[in-house]
Length: 152
Image 1 (cartoon, rainbow, N blue to C red):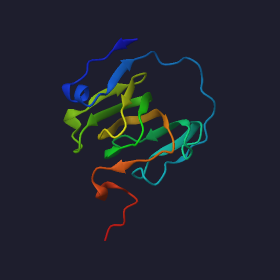
Image 2 (image 1 turned 90 degrees about the horizontal axis):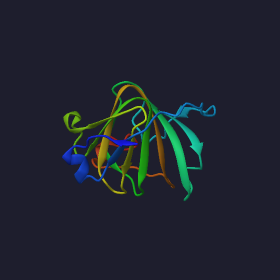
Image 3 (image 1 turned 135 degrees about the vertical axis):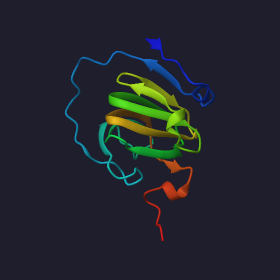
Image 4 (image 1 turned 180 degrees about the vertical axis):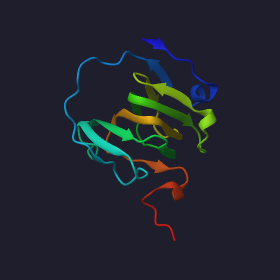
């Protein structure tokens, strides 16, 4: 495993990225459907293992179209993200700023500690694997970014 360069912002945000060779084996067929309503429209999700609604470890894969953005948010538990396809731009902070993202390509892994504000953008059709402890929860830094929020 070789370490990828990290920006100062990511070091401060305690995100660690590692290069890793993509696995040559085929994953089992996944059952894809729309991502939960807490994600902006357009994402798809498949459960790989566990149950994200339970207080147990889980792994899901999320599929995003090119240009998909997840506004600044945080989770109550640590999460590990691995890029399976495409390019995932990840940044730390309260404002989505593509110029301050770190580029994660296929095989790269990142760890985001609980309650750290972060955001992401898909460059090209992108699939990421997310491993965390349930129950899954996601809170937007700006409540107006939450797709579930009622807007007048």
